[in-house]
Length: 452
Image (cartoon, rainbow, N blue to C red; front, side):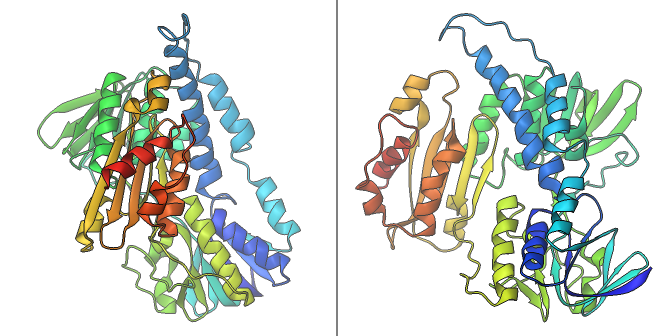
C-alpha cells in the first residue's frame, strides 16, 4: 500500500504497452507498467505465437496427406502431444512471464500487478496503490466477447485461451464465429482429428474480408470435412456429461464434445475508469488523434483504439507514442494501408479497403482478379493451390486502394501489395514491374491485366 510518483504510467503490458514502457524507461523516464494478467499480453501466450505453432503443425499434417499422387505414398498419424508441449516450453514458458517482467525491470521500469482504474487526471489506482504521473498510456487490449446466449454462462466452453491451453483434441467441436480466430482454430482441430462445425451469424465466413475470401475458405473447409453454417445465430446452449448441445435460430440442433466461442473481442472502458479523464466510457473504442493522444496527458494504443486488433497495429502505435512523449520527429498515424492475415490454409492476406468499402466511400472502383490454380506457380504447386489475387483500384487516381492475396503464402505475397497501397504506386508502374517467374506473386501481374 502506498503512493508512487512516475513520469509515465502504462496501463496494459501487451506487445505495444511493453514496448512503450520499456523504451521510455531506457530513455531515462521513470515508468510504471501495470498488468493484470501476463506481461507480454495476448499475443505470446494465447494469440499470434502459440496459435501459429498449432497452425504450422496442422499444415505439416496436411502436406503429408498431399503426398499421394504427387510424390509417393504417405501414412499420417496426428499427435497433439508435441504441439501442446511446444506451446508450453517454447511459446509461453508454461504461461510464466518472468522473462518479460525481468526484461522490463532491467530497462529501469517498475511493474505493478493487478487491475488498474483511472481515478483522475494523472492518477491510477492498482489495488491499494495509487500511482501518479503526468502522462498515462492506455494499452489494455481486448478480451473475448462472449454473447449472451441463453444457457451458455456457466458451461465449460472455450475461448481462444482454453483452445490454446488444451492438452487434448476433442472428438468433436462446434465453433461459434467464422472470423479469423474461429476459422484458424477450426481448421487446426479438424486436421488433428476433430469433427468440426463452424457457425457464423453473417452470410459468409471472414465477413470483414472480400466475399470471395469467405467463399474460398468455405469451399476448402467443405472438402476437408468441416461443416460451415452461415447466416445463423446460436439461440441456446446446454451442457451435460455427453458434451454441448447448441440450438440454432432456425431450430436446428448441433451436438459436440466441446464448444469454442470466437465471436469477437471487447474492451471494458467503464471498468478502466476512462471517464475520469474525460473519455466516453460507453464507446467501443478510445478516440485518438494522429499522435495517439486521447486527452491532455493521455495516449492510447492497440486494440483499444479500434483500428484493428493486431499486434503489428499496437507496435505501430507504440512507436508514435514513444516519439511524441520524447519529442522526437515521427510520421503521424495513417490507416489507408493496414495489412491483415488470416492464417488458414489457404492464407488470406488483405490490405486497405475491400471493394464494398471503397464503393461506400464514393470511390470510382475498378477491380481485377486472377486465380492461383491457373497461374504458373499454382499449376506447378498443384495439391493445395487454392487461392486468388483481387485488386481494388481507384479508377480516377489510377492507384490501388485495397487488395487480397489468398493462397499458399498469401500473407507473404501481401507484402508487395501493402507497399503499393501505402505508397499509392500508380497502377501503370505496377504493370511495368518485373515479376519473378514462376512465383505466386506473378498472380498480381495477372490481376493487374484485368484492371486495364
